[in-house]
Image (cartoon, rainbow, N blue to C red; front, side, top):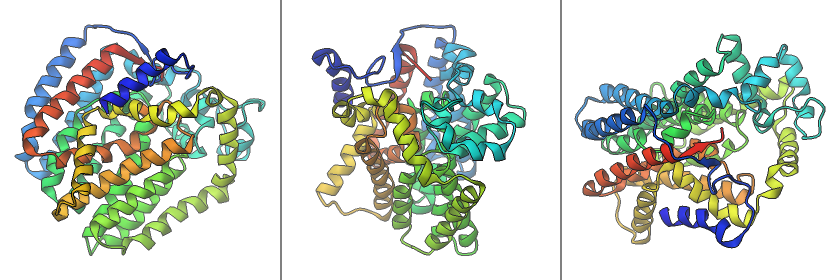
Length: 423
């Protein structure tokens, strides 16, 4: 993955090709800096790295709480490298959700005019992020504004906090289908790493958490008898909600399929489908037809910056950009998983389950990049798939995990101090 990232960074300069990214392959500016929070970030990194062995020693309930707290601290510390602006700048920008969400007076009117306001030449068109997502994303932020989260800092802090709960959800899902040892092995990689940078500065961290909790409910439904049906319905409702906040999240169905295969049961499927279809029915009845909106969004996408981003570059450079988010250490997990599959190595039930979750997540990335609807900015757009791919690092030999984890932490610090994302 490191080689792919390096190639994607060098290619525009070597070829002279215009790829429409400030510091390709990332949507960021090259801005080396040391701030008052830099020493704090380094100390937190050292402490959390030193505490990683606790993942194997704490009781499960305590581990869930400590892992979330550590994720929040790590994410918050990285964001604060840039001070308060590291949290509120994103949501203060004109093209972000807060501007449009604050202007919505009537939800019914928003439904009625949502699709007509997507085109780039529409009068009073939606700003970039609202136009680029289904109406559920707008409604989410309308609700938050009406609850009082109407300034960029409080909104950013809430988004960061909810986004970090995805780690807990992935741990629960892993334990349900792969066992506690696998979940414990994956936990340090879920907590620490560069992905925290992007969870802290984009709404995609919220979408990651919504779908992660949906998959956690689905995984729990495969391993329970008494509460399997309510869990499966909850999974469908959450995963269905995911589809209505991001056009890319139907792909999460691949990971849902992997979850059912890992759990070795299809019993939750009809209940989960029922939950998802209920969400679709509610949105459609309210006036938003997903299948009508998506083609309009595609047209706007290619009327804008996407037309200037060459597919021949981004179809592979996206993966290099994603590696900056996931951490190039994820390449070790992917490579190890591929070796296990190629060698037809006999796997334990836990190993098979981890491969299914991680492998389907990587499959989501490949489908997304081939689609041509993800050209750049995937550091945040692909966040919902990232923690599941990171699960593959749990398959590494025990002696390899600590050096890879240390690499992930160093990469996170370097990325935060060298690049300034444009969200």
